[in-house]
Image (cartoon, rainbow over all chains, first blue to last red; front, top):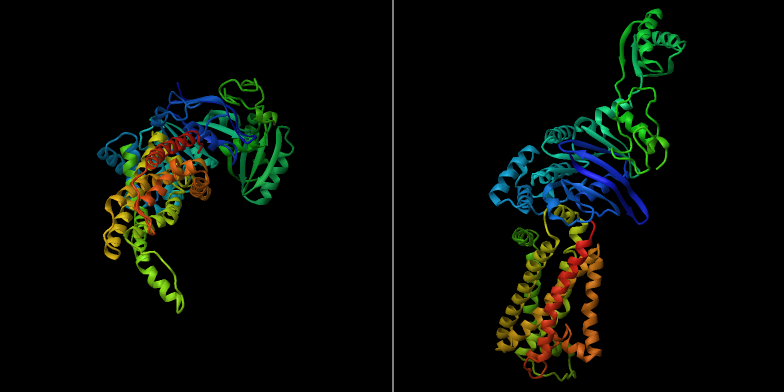
Amino acid sequence: MNAIELDGLTRDFDGFRAVDSLTLGVPKGEVYGFLGPNGAGKTTTLKMLAGLLSPTSGQAKVAGESVGSGTSSLNLRRKVGFLAEEPSFYPWMTAEESLVFVGRLFGADTTEARRRADGLLEIVDLAGRRNDRIRGFSRGMRQRLGIAQALMGKPEVLLLDEPASALDPIGRKEILDLIASLGGEATIIMSSHVLDDVQRVSTWVGILREGRLVAEAPLDDLLLRYARPVFHLEVAGLAERERVAARLRGESWLREIVGGGGGLRILVADPEAAQLRIPGLVAEAEAHLVEFATVTPTLEDVFIHLMRGEAPPADTERPETQVGGDHPHPDGGDDDAPSAAEKGAR
Amino acid sequence: MRVLVGKEILELRRTFRFIVLPALFLVFGITGPAIIRTLPLILKNAGGQGFDLQMPDFGPADGLAQFLQLTRQMGLLAVIVVYMGIVAGERKDGTLAMLFVKPVSRLDFLWARWAVNGAYVLVSFLLGCAVAVLYTLLLLGRPDYGAMAAATGLYLTYVLLVFSWTTLFSALVRSSAVAAGLSVVPLFLLGLLGFIWKPLGLYGPYGATAAGTAVVGAAGIPPVPVPGSALISAVLNLALCVLCVLGAYRALRRAEL
């Protein structure tokens, strides 16, 4: 069952289409990474789901509540927690007052709101600043407080717009761990252009480009789909590397060799043949093998592929990964048809 | 609603806004009668020999009238400046978006903001009135308390209306400065149009203040009882206040954040 469902969601701003026929579903309890470059439409989509913007056309349901026409629905907002990219607060409130205020807006009495605020302040590492005015908070502290206030209403759905963008590495890890731990309890959409963050916590990924969904799948499926038959080979010394490269160039299955760092990145047409033959070639070149491994694709590889409008590797075994959303694509395409990205079209 | 009202009261205290308007009206309450008390002396000293200016005998009514005039001119401008960002400011700094993703009715938000801050404006004005009466008593003699109470009541409706239309304009536009500019327009236009077209002057929003000044009496003109037109004007002002809040809600209901 999907906690979030979008059906042809579209939003125009003065003739500019920021979100274009977005159709997707987020299963309940998943952490959905919403990826895209700046201006791809991530924030606009999240704002529509939070009821802050109205769609130009299309429909959306969040936690069973329609956001298409009822942006003023109180029921929707009781079920949703939202963190803006740059969260705003009343600067004259203290951190604790701000959370208690939010808790009371969700119907909790003061005692319950204070108890919950105390717990969340501990979680986001602001307990020591609970009585300080927010006016003096850094951006990172505001972001932590923003996550706490988004959780105050015990939301079924959590919409997080770049939740870790202003945090230092330790804070980033803590918040990402927190988000990952919430998966299962709440359904989370987390937008980001920091691919590593999304890869660390997301179970599903959707990639937006120019307002359109160009890929959507469980993370592992997406990585597998875009996995390229690449090996990393490292031998001892530059001369040995040259000798090995020369022998590799004579192989029919070789597509490309890229030297970089201490090793070679070898792109091949026939991974099985290459895997069997490469160690032998190293021995023939009288080189000392230091490392030989299959390169694991990262979300970054997938993202760059999609942003360039490149097709996934055709000769890779592919799972049932959806490109263009898990519903029929607005263009009328299906899973096997070229995606918008593949067609290089918007 | 109670949570929102509590937040508004806390905001008034924390932002020190609660000092600004009472302090200003307090100053008007003191300077109004004081100006009248010292004016003949100032003019006499400034004129020198051969300067013979005929002036009416100033009395307690003039002290009160001077306070009301200061309120009508600078006091209302101060209300506009203090509240030009009552909605636009929150929209600009993002707190409105933060609030409206919570289960908060936009109408409740507006009513709470209008009620608490409107009450604060009125209390500030009443404080000024009380001080004006006190200083009039000390400097100019015993004022007509009944006339001053009637004038205060009539002025209250207009002061509240100015605050209400400032709220409306602040909800209609995104910029606090533009909201202030728009709010100043009716402030001047209503007086001017009322002067040109008498029915508007008598029964329109500005009629309450004109009648309030007349009720107090000043510059040798005897005080008059509260005219029926002033009561109509006062009721109209209160009705317009409600319309302003509903208009602000209409603007805010459709607002995208």
